[in-house]
Image (tube, rainbow, N blue to C red; front, top):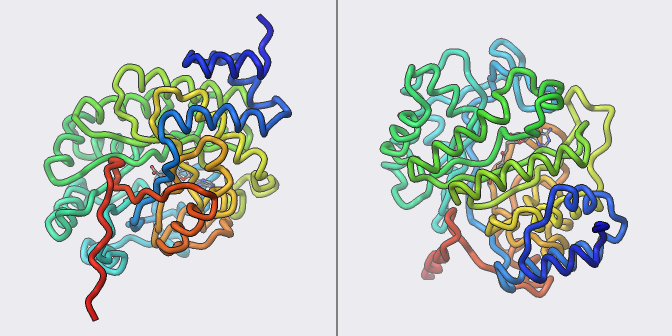
Length: 364
Ligand code: V47
């Protein structure tokens, strides 16, 4: 049967799964408003009128990395100007600076440092967990976990269980980039394969932890590569149900090897979210990370399948190094205002999408 938007709408209304052929069609079909309207059916079915956000803070403990991903403006070699590594004491000071009553998550991602021992990472999690027992620690991409396992001489699942014992709550979705091996080799030749990334997440799910998934788009990949990536995520989610949310990450070219390319367009950012909503029928949430696509596009994407705008974020470094224009933090009032103005119900969530209580107002 010929693929068209009418047949896709009928399938989605009937709760049927879309094929990869239909996914590729959606990546290029001109009628973005109809694609958004179909994605909105799924969005409403799964999340009603809710738009989620979280009060969180990011900690990037080092930018020194043995990998040299060609899309990354954050990475430095150990002796390069601008390289930094936080001592555990500095990590605790950063956490203190980012913490305020109501912060429910620390989001922690860093480079693959050539010399730090495994004890540094375990110590970081244990110290943060001890100092902030109510704050969920979402830390270390699958790429970092794979690296820690190698430096610790342990298996991946053993490493994950050990970090979980220390207080790790869940894994962020970074490092997925694009799974296709040919494109992956061109943009991040040193990085673990897509298959390995999926295996680490599968191990995390088996160890009883949830995780996020991402995809870096808008560089040299094709619509087919994007859909292949989504299909592989959908396959793992069928097996484990461990993914919390999917976040498409819009490529930022400044200070990267691909600095001759343009920023992504609003059209592509919104389409990527809508198509993700439609293809990932077994994911509960699709996140429009405002740092990557601006608060303005994040707000509009709520009508196109997204149900989450991420959070207050204080203070993101990776996208900012690559030319993000959105700033490094948003206040909760601004996030709530964006959601309300669009006619959605702001839902302050914790990492696991449970309601997160607002702090008691300070008495005067
Ligand atoms: O893996 C690196 C991406 C990721 C660039 O799990 C870039 O909730 C755009 O994964 N342009 C790290 N993107 C950040 C990340 C993340 C962010 C927010 C929320 C969550 C979550 C995860 O950032 C990397 C890479 O894919 N990245 N360089 C760049 N130039």
